[in-house]
Image (cartoon, rainbow, N blue to C red; front, side):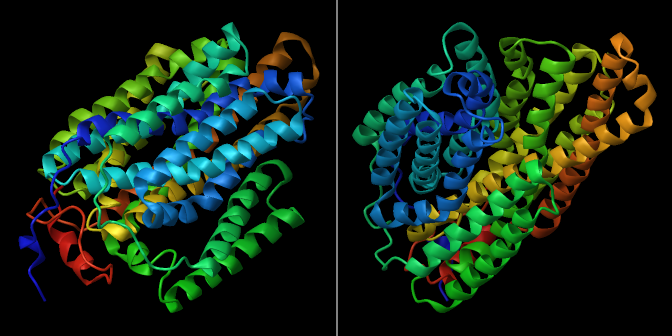
Length: 512
């Protein structure tokens, strides 16, 4: 078997840094869109006459299409060309955003959100896999993924700020229209500067059974968790969705192990280091999505912050993520093993989360919430960056898109689980607190309002304890499963026919 450490690296793309600008811009657009609409939802619901029972579908339609089609989108990028998939995804996202901004009713809005999710599922894996094949030098790769990781981590908070401004000072429709200039600039720039490696496409026929089973399985899983949040875990449809997702995804794995040209080659999923990244990252996202929701409600409902002030209140977390990703993760990634960044990074984020378990109605923002956010941002930024890079390291170029899609899938599924699971825990704790203080709550007046606020905060604190445990579990998984060593001379993207042998040999010497 050849010594893969001596394999010459792929030639560096001369326009790679210009391309990074447009890839990062597109990633920012997709990530902030996940939260920017949350701020605008109450106004949009009133204008369009969307019922309380259907308002969750403005969020769910996007999540289902995005999460369900990610693997398909990743494989399309491998087959069709990542640059082509990237540009088409951007143009489609812009058109869907225009449709959402111009929506005149519930059906048009939900259709636009589903289209945004579908084109996002084409765009997101193409963006990450372009980085994987364009940046081949270890130090440059570290810087590129540092920037990408900071945007992936902090974009959601940017969405809260931007959404607050647009909703408060313009109109909710601008939370959709704002995507159009982002998409146009990124698409034109990408078309002009990106030069994708010519031999990086996957010419194998498309695995149609794999597409159908994976899409239906992921949609059932995401919808199951989304429905659990509103209808409960014992609801018949919720249970049916979970059962269906298990059956469909098990069938998907069986099919992938048998077909000649699988949608998701199991070597991509089962390689120890990538498997550790997907699992630890998905768990970490569970805690982060829940926290965004709780802090947003705490600051607006309990503390009385405006939407704009709430958005700015998340700035310390963004700052922490940028510093953790670009100044800690990127600088150390070529010097230490990835697990020694990811494991401690998740623990630092867990320490920030632990501070938030002390949340009370009268808690001080500067004394408690600000330092907690800084720790969360630093930890997540430090951990996310090597995770994003390692997820596509050593992958055959023909599999880079689907490997990138798995990163996004773990985040999407983690987000759906986090919102449902932690929200349910918080609601149960709030209900129990109100039951224990029923007499005071029934008295009315300021005392009753205080009890309501205390019950809400009690619920948040209970759920945040679970988030702490989840981050500790992420750290343990990263430290035990991920065993790739210090940087070596291996190429960050393998070459060959995708059989898997050369991929496995490169992993221990990747440049981290």
